[in-house]
Length: 284
Image: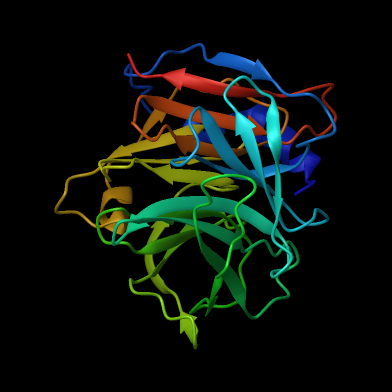
């Protein structure tokens, strides 16, 4: 999403993070792996790959082909996997999780800058074991919001309940919606509003693989919540928030936990910067 004015305002004022404690459990300075320009310039979502070592799956937003990019920890791109069976209207996030012993990827076609789409989509596919694998089945989860059209850039998979959660972007206080498991693929679902949060311009989020930690980010801040096993994601997000270390990126729209919960990655769209880097904040 190319809203540079909003980006500059958010970075300049920093008002959303005022008074929020920065917790000291991750390194303040990330390990950086520069990306070569022109290959993944509009990263809108990523997850740590569970089938290929030392790599992440990345998607790009509207205007790009429907494909997955495999990004190595060193910043090189191993290649891309085309998904011609589906469309990239505006892919804005990527989540992953295990269901019945199978790893799945969830591609969130949920961007809607002008609030013009009645329906949004999440594509569910078995996580590829290699770039050469042929994906035989991609399911489409179709949903609408209970309170009107929304622009969103954040999808969460809850490893405890298997629910999917969508966080809206443009409101002064963003909204969190739930699609309860199992998500039907033969009907239009109505998402359930489960929380309203006093933040704006949320561009990405992630749930740790054990479900005990949650992060959301906007262009200037990474927000963090611990979660008890007895809490839903919506309940946990209503608790006291903290901040994690984050060096502001040109247009940061991707974040994910490491699959072993050893830290978290961030990746920016290149925007007008000469290059961007894959950043990893190691747990202490």
